Image (cartoon, rainbow, N blue to C red; front, side, top):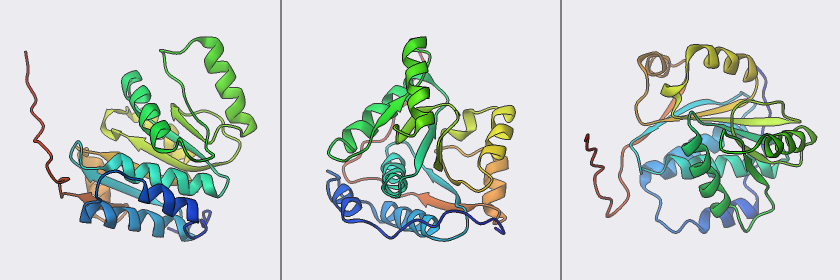
Length: 210
């Protein structure tokens, strides 16, 4: 809490346009989580917020809005995901939501060739990539770190993250927080946003084991 971070500007007109283009209606919790994240980003203190919510409750939309807010202030965004499939899924979602805005999104995973990855990493270093989905790399000006499915990352990865995010705004998303993360949130070492209201007409998730 003593660290000094980057204080982002208030919402731009493009930020308002992005949020108005969301085809679903925001749930009350989603609106609250978005407002809390933006307030964190606009303050001098580096954000360390956990967003906890079930699958399909709209955590990713909150992350997209936060990412675009960072990009609007010429900062880069890293989205850390634990699996190749999730990296591609997020890439598609982010690309679709931000297609009408001046924002370059890339992803790296095992599914991409070495040449493709090398080219993307070079562009990230030079600052021409705004949002990178995948794993931690060297950024020109990293402003926001988004960690999805935090419970699937090992301890060694988390230690590396702690060094990376000393004064970088950090947004963590999970449906099932691990006890350590939950303990940090409950004792106040981490801010917590809980999304408990399901979107209208949402069907419950059914998990079947063959």
